Image (cartoon, rainbow, N blue to C red; front, side, top):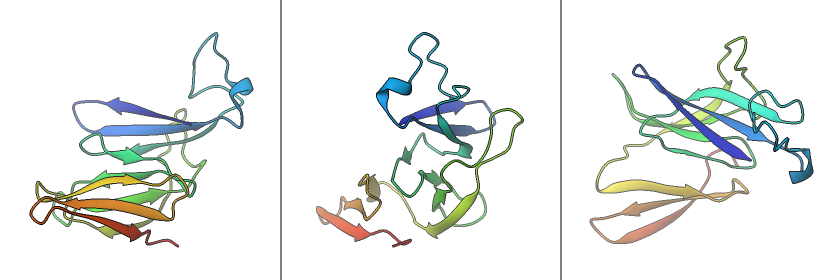
Length: 131
């Protein structure tokens, strides 16, 4: 799996490109978005360049413009680079990611995610909201 980041002045977006095996990757072109062997998810919005790959679909951080910040999970295999079709949002939770409390990672199975509280020094292991 490859997480490809695409940034413009207006917004950051990403694509997830999944290959069933390393033998199916066309190393001649390295065109992860248009390779017929790849299952592509995206584009999907990514703020601050923060996204994670899980078995249940990619999760991205969204900074709330006029609402709360959120962690958003997208449907694997949804969306298209051409014609442009955004990935399907499956679910989300509000999360105030700041200097004191920060999302660190998701485990690949999609069962757990980890957040660090800088004030207390605690590392939290949390069950994902979709399991």
